[in-house]
Image (cartoon, rainbow, N blue to C red; front, side, top):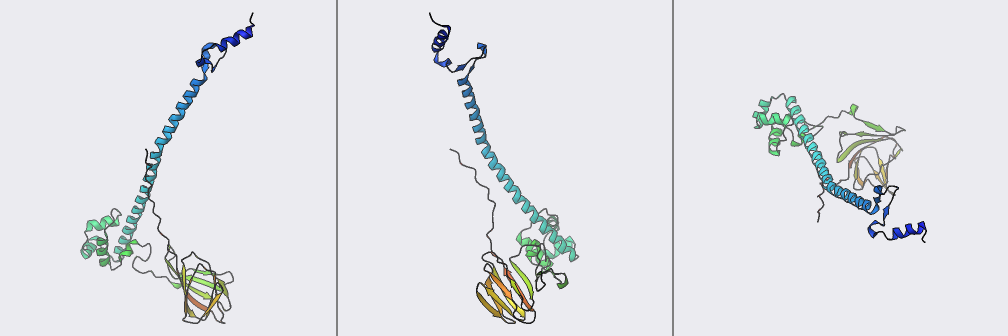
Length: 274
């Protein structure tokens, strides 16, 4: 005679293979098939993976749209800059749109569109307008010196002075925007040595002594300059300026900044799918 435990064990052993992974609760109607649950989880994972794959082209399209918007904003800024400069130049010469149209041969409607930043004229049109206003074409693209020149009064020019007051540098160019070259007037007190600031590779410095004497040190080499002498050296090297005389030295410095290649925001092509 079999024990109740043995009967239960035999009954489970005789169940079909499809039901051996079934977990039972007290009520048989609430039985859950673990294999079925695993199948559902696999289906859900597959849907998530397909959704992520479908979202990749959307991300690429979004990046391309943002790059296009950035280029459009830059173009709008150019329209505004040209328009503002044209309106200022015309107003300074007390010319009406009709008068400028007659002088340049460009229609009044086109001039009005340019001034209101609704159109960017061609180079040919800009040349005609520039000739009538007696300025260069680049005057329409500047944020300073729109008349072809800019007066920089000495009393208003910014001057950087060292802590001990024995060295000063005065900018002789507009400092509002980055420039390919910098122009400074230097004043160095007697027997004072001013260490130079090392710049990026490719930057060059040109010094001309206007008054007094100057000793230039580049690494361990020294060069003495008298009034009227000039020197050119690479500014990425350690260097210093020393006034060996008993009177103030006045020096003009031109710094040519290193050229850097432009960086273009080129939209990446969408990945190819097989």
